[in-house]
Length: 460
Picture (tube, rainbow, N blue to C red):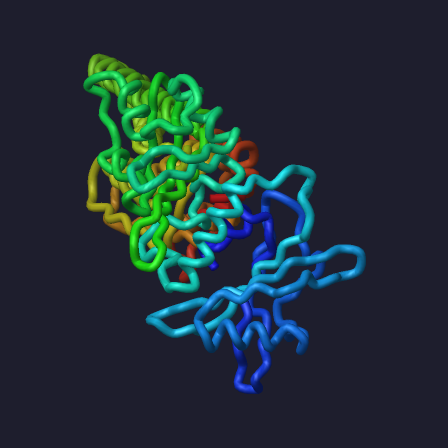
């Protein structure tokens, strides 16, 4: 089923896979409609039983292991359908039957059907009946980006000479730089001759262009990219040429390159912002050391810490391409530095419980700044020159985040108003950037303070 779409598209036929049940009836197990023309079955046939009048030919194909073609078309309303019964051979045993059902007439799907495409479909059906198709380990039509029949078809003989090329395939090779009609030329030589010297090429290119192996390859000349898939044909165990599917993927590769350049640019911007912030942090640190006023020194030190927190987030963003960060890794660094800077005396330990998970860039900046402020306040004001522990407990439920910053200090004095600069920064970021709320309350047990932050993060 992974590769029978090729047969359906080449012959503009519906393929139905029938299995023989214990009751002796044939039941439809899978169905493939052609992407190159109109379907025979407008309704879903999977699970239906085969009409009794057709079961004799299906059973003959299953028992004999040979393709059986109905002598006369089957009329369905006003249209006639040509039926072919192809046994599916696995380990030399027929295990199912495929019906290849084709609307009778010269015109199907609004176009004239090419005889060479019909012959290629016949060759693949014969390989199915001989257990040679699908080819083990081959790239299938279900893989993303794999060329399909509608993209372009080339037929090769045993020597790799083109015996037929569809109009789309001709156009693909002309865009690549192959001049003139490619029918009658040795395809591998024609393509190799236009590739500039010292250009790196896929090592599988030659065997694919010769039709020797069932592989995928890609050829690039002058910014034009062709994706090529080879399906070697066999008849009675001997090589019988090959079928090539070709697709122009130049636009896809250009878009990928644009995205890669964009990702590299974003990472470079974050890297430069981080470096600039670290420079600003160093300047603030130098200025703080030179300050003679204690209040000025403390203000500069606070500013340096805040800048350093933002720089930490940009350092993490410079390693990613999706503008998201593993906030647990970022915050572990922020937590250590915030507690260390805010501890003039005493021994303060920090503990992180739960997980933040992946956070988008916008939320990460605000969240890191808020939590750094809360940890600093817990150390400076909650513990205030005494030994203790600051615990940060995170609970994540999709985009909803709840964080408790708990210290085991003296606790809040009743009636105390939170009016400091750090508190104003926290409140502004929580309500604005994080779309959340923040509350100060006594810690469980009555010792210390529990700051509860609730935030709404972008979907990760």
